[in-house]
Image 1 (spheres, rainbow, N blue to C red):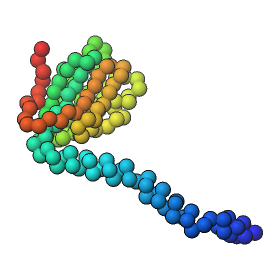
Image 2 (image 1 turned 90 degrees about the horizontal axis):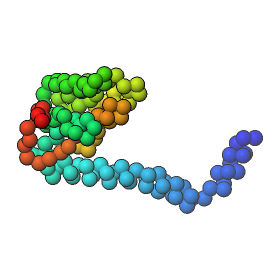
Image 3 (image 1 turned 180 degrees about the vertical axis):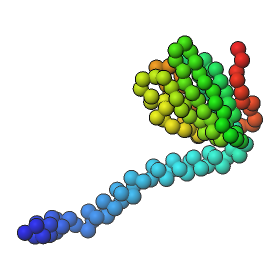
Image 4 (image 1 turned 90 degrees about the vertical axis):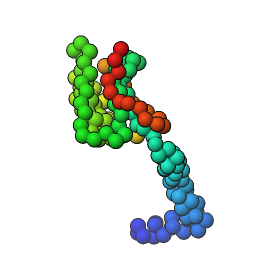
Length: 144
């Protein structure tokens, strides 16, 4: 009985309907291809691009680290009163690995490594972002 019901519905679908469904399926992946192409072109256009991780607290820059050609592990511990975040850069990636905030969203974000990506710890007003620039910039602690 079910096979006759299925046959009834399949007869209602016309060949042009299958073409429309197929085109919609293909069209759903077009934005992915366009964005991947643009990102590839942006990376090819700037071979001397330098990625720098910038740590800001309450809008004020407190630490800067050059990620391009960075090897090994660098640790930075942000502390403001009872609030703290452990920031770890491993090779060309950076992450907040530990924090004493309640929500732990910044820790769950994981590693970032591309220009424009960021990690935010709202309870501590902390921002880790990656910026790209051409030429060479020194990384390191910003002194005030």
